[in-house]
Every structure is written in C-alpha cells, then in structure tokens.
Length: 123
View (cartoon, rainbow, N blue to C red):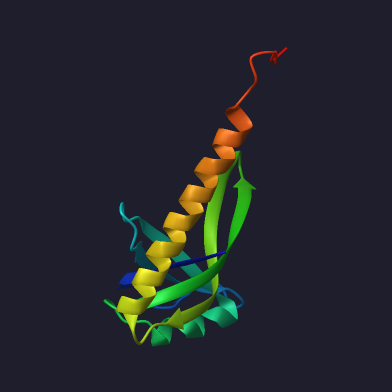
C-alpha cells in the first residue's frame, strides 16, 4: 500500500533492545478531508528517517501489521520505502485526480451491486 502527503513530525531513532530499533513519523494526507497518519520504521529501515524533513512531501510505501498481546490488539503501519517529492504541486494534483477516480469507481460498483429488478427477491 502507499499514501502521499506532507511530513508533519519526525522522531529520532530509538533502540529498544540490542536487536530492535524504531523511528516514527507523522504524515498528513492531501485529500479533501486530510488525515494525520503515524508510520513506523523498524531495524534497517530506520535509516530512511534521516532523509525526512518537516514540511516535505513524500509518498510512503507501507505494510499493515497487526498483533495481539495479553488480549489487546495493536495495528502498526510499517513503512518500507519513502519517495521524497521535489515537485509536490504536480504530485498533489495527480494524487487528487486518482483519489477522485477511485471514489467514482467505488460508487459505480456499489450502485451495480444494489440494483435489483422488480421480480428479484432478496430471500
């Protein structure tokens, strides 16, 4: 998965154990209703945090990782690649157009699934 947005915060690399380290950053999407999303970088990927600057636009490639611990469930967004943008205005326009196209395609699918003929019964 990937998402495009503006970097809002960048943390320092934290060594949790001898074999595990992490860094976090906050990205704000550039949609009609912007979302602030926190990502984490772990182990060898923590080196990516050094190229991030607050106010910079970036496309973040990530995986969703879920885990259970003591009956509680946690979800992390693990970034594995970050493409920093030099020309953000063009990228924002392209991203907004793709988002609009995806929303329109979703609406068409929902309409097709809902439409029933008068003779059709749901049960």
